[in-house]
Amino acid sequence: MNYDSPVRLALFSPLPPVKSGIADYTVELLTAPGRQHQIDVFVASPDEQAAWPRDRTTVNVRSAHDFVWARVRTPYDLVIYQMGNAWCHDYMWPYLFKWPGLVILHDAHLHHARAWSLLRRRRHADYRAELAFNHPSVSPDAAEIGLSGFSGPLYYFWPMLKTVVASARAVAVHEPRLAADLAAEFPHAHVRAIPMGVADPVSSGEAARAIRLQHGYGPQHVVLTAFGAVTPEKRIEPILQALAVARKYQPDIRLLLVGQAMPHFDALAAARALGVDDLVTIAGYVDAAELPAYLAASDVVLSLRWPSARETSASWLRAIAAGRPTVITDLAQQADLATLDPRSWTVVHAQPTLTPLEPVAVSIDILDEGHSLTLALKRLTIDAALRARLGAAARAHWEAGHTVDHMASAYEEMLRDAAALPDPVVTLPPHLRPDPAAFARRLVGRFPGVALLDSPPA
Image (cartoon, rainbow, N blue to C red; front, side):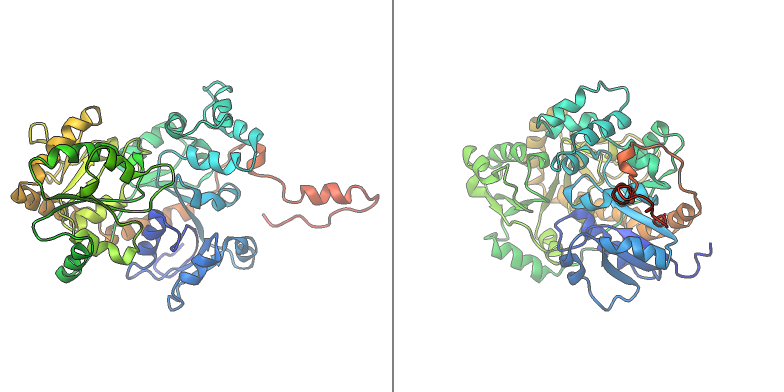
């Protein structure tokens, strides 16, 4: 296949106004300059179709219900699935198993999303079958835990990836260590790492000052910002505990939470319980167009996460692209970064042969989270020179490997290779590849001498 000329791609992904990092990621990928492929994006809702600009002639946004007949009329060269561990990918599951393609796996755990999809429809037998297929060494009784209503961190024990990886032509992830781990676990799969890229979050000083003024911050305030849904997994409570100590050293410290509030966690109540609610502002969900100004208004960005599905954080990449000093959790997917340990303020680097050795963030040991985070906030809020040094190194790290051009170029190579691969031969649980004409056959079977003449398209 000649990829010097445009090709036809089918892409399944959420798009704005869906509040999803992957939706924003897909927009950046689709609008990358120099990409001329004809792309049909298949989405779940009319709102996503209506929000897409009509002047982008190489990209059509369509209902997922159109895919079956569209591919029959004019076949696609490749189907791409942007898959993550969230509810907004729910509509993709039937297509992913029926029409194999390239799966961009944004999380190394899909159990939360798949359990939500099956159990809310009371498909208990299908959940049992999929858990057994994905994790044959686990006792069948493990499924009863999910059926009983338990979820959350427990799901991290069983990622439920095998159905997705085994049924895909190829799988791409955004972290080399994860790619190596998946290749070892699934030796017959085609797995590759491609860098995640984000656009340069350009913002004016005037826009940043307007954001600070909007939330009551003056030039003397040191603003710590956490982006993304406001959940316990973003380590909000440990941040608040560290804030209670750090304010004694820097009275002008402030915390800004920028993201959607969730019904199961009241961040303001947690702040009130610790006596720091006067330092906390909850901005709520903000449009992607406003994020550059919020980043520019931040003095330090807190990009913490635990438990982790080994996801690559787009919000962290946007922060470093903006040249912000960041505090991250020391996770496996970030083990190759040069970072500062706040307990000693020395550089931690798992791969000393890699460059740059200049630390790009402060990393927090999850086993010493409270202590390490308190030390980090105490130092960063009073040391402007350190903040500047970390921010400059962070920006250089983004420029070296995480621009949209880096990501789009890697996609081009991956598309060519995935399109040349055959569909995998795999025996999945029967309900994942049902016979679409089964009901019709049962219906006409009641009438002697009547039969279906044609099989449905493959």
